[in-house]
Length: 155
Ligand code: MG
Image 1 (cartoon, protein in one colour):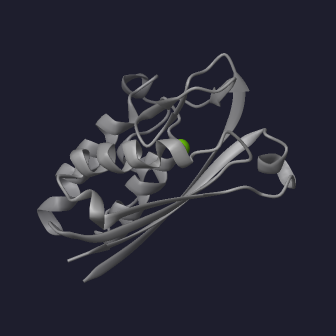
Image 2: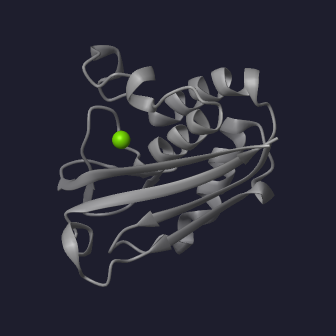
């Protein structure tokens, strides 16, 4: 059994689509970054790489590389899993928390679970997505950023 932890944060800005867990979510702002800035998928990639002792997402997909400009993070997750699954093929479970003041993510959790399960070739029943606010405090609470944390156990 191997365990991995991932964390990521991106600024929330106007004029960008909001993509979390590979699902586009209707909102007045979106996450900014070199790729599509899918903070949940980035935390998940780092958790997988951590479990496999394969470094981190910045080493695999440098944000200085134009190849990854506006990259779809689900594609980065698929490539991450292609490498990790050679060493650690079976996901026991995956648990993630998104830190966001708004919008409410409840209606999208099921779609996110299905999207991630499809990309990782696993059962959605092994994936749990949680969301929490920061009670109005800090850059996340003020709606200027979103963060995500993920832990994964691999057989
Ligand atoms: Mg990131």
